Length: 317
Ligand SMILES: *[C@@H]1O[C@H](CO)[C@@H](O)[C@H](O)[C@H]1NC(C)=O
Image (tube, rainbow, N blue to C red; front, side, top):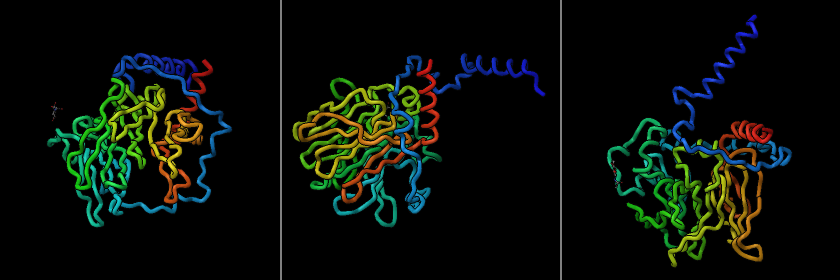
């Protein structure tokens, strides 16, 4: 039997340790201005059960295992070549059917510090120098590739690849700090997300813990070269995908765990509504081949349950 007094002492020491954090183990110790924000979570009964009843994921095939580090988005060019993907060291690679080849990069300041490393995590300290391409989309008409680089902003590179050209690095005087994903329509509009103006990609966990609401949905026009803020005060907006007819787009909002629909045309144009509530943090969203349904990749599903519990407990206080 362990005496209750001893357990009590242990608990007190643990609480003191967590409270004082003498060895700076806490994820927020480097963020003296850290602030947490309320997340309006939907009621538990509206969150779908985490079941894939058709076992669709189990039937999928794992490709390119251990061949690329940290791929996020994938794209195929208008000639059907690819996939193309952005990797942890800042390059955009092209699968030519046999090998992964260098295709493009966003940083004009690459050096040996961007060379191959043992794990995707080892690139984190230099991501702001080497670049970190996340969202990729081709313009079907021109073959130009548009790139959302987490640190460097929105870029474009021609069909021959090479060094990409920056298009947007700030909006309304607020720098893009965590450009994440994009989609492009037939009229030269690029819809893209900036996940946060406070936290960068390497601090995405702090962004999750904070749930701060500086995320934005943006629109850049290739002809006017103007950028507009469509929706602000978002809590970790992420993937973006246009509907087939271009009348709306769907984007992920990570912290509340949902997909939002933003109307582009019709009488609801400019308004946002909830499209789907999800049992995790949605990361990317893409339409299927026919363009009549959307699928979203979730991460941290188990963590999401803890997160919901933590938010619910905070609300009780
Ligand atoms: C270029 O990268 C080096 C590190 O390799 C860094 O010290 C320097 O500040 C960078 N220059 C610019 C203009 O970003």
